[in-house]
Amino acid sequence: MKTLSLLFVAASFASIALVRASDARCYELRTYYAAPGKLEALNARFRDHTMRIFEKHGMRNIGYWMPIDNPDNLLIYVLEHASREAADKAWKEFGADPEWQKVARESEANGKLVSKVERRFMSETDYSPAIKPAKSGGARVFELRTYTAAPDRLENLNARFREHTCKLFEKHGMANLAYWNLVPGEKDADKTLVYILAHKSKEASDASWKAFREDPVWVAAKKASEEKAGGSLTFPEGVKSVFMTPTDYSPTK
Image 1 (cartoon, one colour):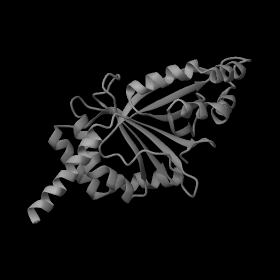
Image 2 (cartoon, rainbow, N blue to C red; image 1 turned 180 degrees about the vertical axis):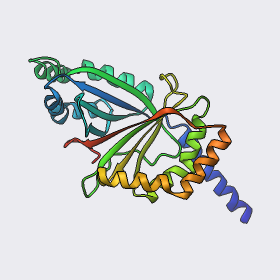
Image 3 (cartoon, rainbow, N blue to C red; image 1 turned 45 degrees about the horizontal axis):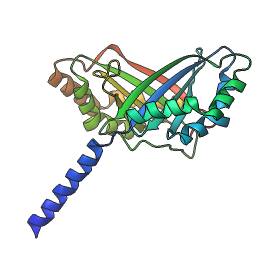
């Protein structure tokens, strides 16, 4: 009986791993540069029309944010797609949707709302929390962080997050929302980690980061991981951080 139980447990874990490995979902990080004076109109279009039309075509809205310091009039958001191929199909159908074409035409009667769009397709890491819209009982600020790994050290970086960093973030009051690597074929897919944290406030984040960096457990984990890899896991200046607030229509707040 004991042998059968162990076999059942092993089979269960194998099944979970297989499901995760075969999960083709991908996520799209999009950054819009609103034309001068058009950021509010762009938000209104998302609030009143775009999000609903996205869902109509199978694109799931995860979250919408604007940087706290926003001189470039940015809107940043994340969508979920069933697969990379499904994303292409959904965007094609969205662009051809008569309702969207009418909305775009009417909203741009006095000029384009967006001057530039950047996008990256990403896959969920094996250590990421389940990625879904999430609301808190109180106000939060969000931190979008992008790491550029040193050559051939992305897996070392992922291992450090998997085994140490994520738990230490939570220990110091930072909520892990999502972790991604770029999908194969994306520029710098072999060296990029993207993740989002949530904080109670910008001041709380400052205190959390200070405590995290001074934590002896983190100091030891960082040292050990760099000794194993033969040096720093990221490029110099390879960590970028953007603090953001959710829009009033964001599913994640």
